[in-house]
Length: 175
Image (cartoon, rainbow, N blue to C red; front, side):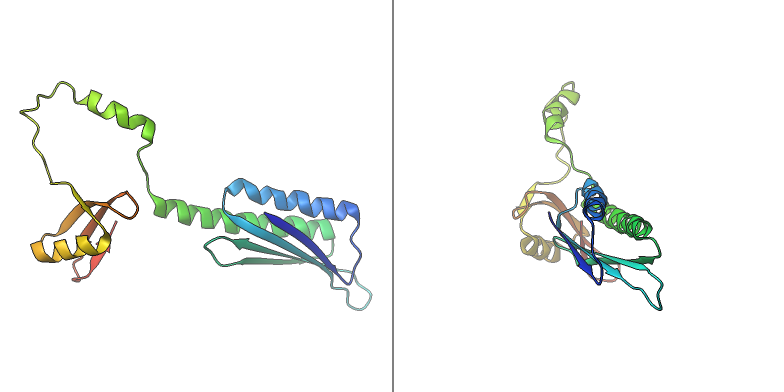
């Protein structure tokens, strides 16, 4: 992760730089692909009053850039408020991403699955559905040809189990 700090219309002390760096390092805990964090600190003083404007620009891989701007009379308060808002934005993004991923069976449990069904004879096993290995286009073609409502297949491209289904409106969905 690249981190840069830029000051406009003001001089940053070493303590201020360390405070910003420490605050920005808190964003790494979300385990997102953060490419860079750019921090711009500006003095927004008008008519003799001092006010600090802190702007965090967070670049994520495979996602748009998140920009957080926060102004406050106190520099440290502005940084704290901006970091809290950035944490909230990253937490929401991580929740959205993790909801789409779904659950996968860890590899360490795959060996235990046959042991669960060791008491069933081979003659009793009935194959519920044939196993298909398609890419998405082949699966769509198969679904259209057979007229079924869904087809479960192993995706050749990703190696994951996929389900292609026919929706009520006539279009198709992929899970």
